[in-house]
Image 1 (cartoon, rainbow, N blue to C red):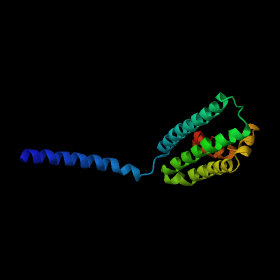
Image 2 (image 1 turned 180 degrees about the vertical axis):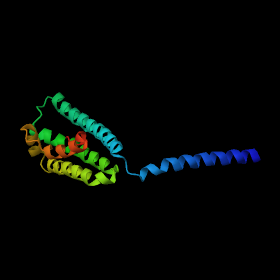
Image 3 (image 1 turned 120 degrees about the horizontal axis):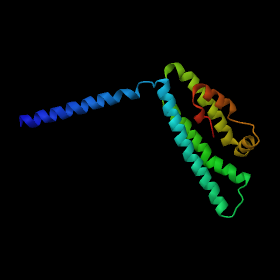
Image 4 (image 1 turned 60 degrees about the vertical axis):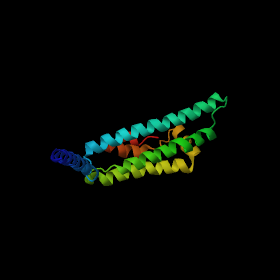
Length: 155
């Protein structure tokens, strides 16, 4: 009986030590390198997801014998890319950058979100700007490149 109690105490102690060791990371801001690495990976993963969804929607239209029109492209943009970009920005905002960089990261994300809001408000105009090299993400991308987050500032 004493042996079972000792084993139980050791298991509880080991579990408590594990939980204490794992609990501190959520309250600690990330280093710049950690933040960049996580944000880049997150942006790449989320971008790939909505690129694939948009491509699949476009291919489905083409397989149905339709020519993909500007209206179709706008619908694809509104239904896949815009929600994907919004989700990506929400996820990046959930990461905690170093306190010294928080304002800079907020400016980057704000600039990206402005462009996403424009795409959401008028998908056809956004596509027109992209096609005719108006570069709607230029400002956001310049800010992001300066911090190392250019993967996040792309549609």
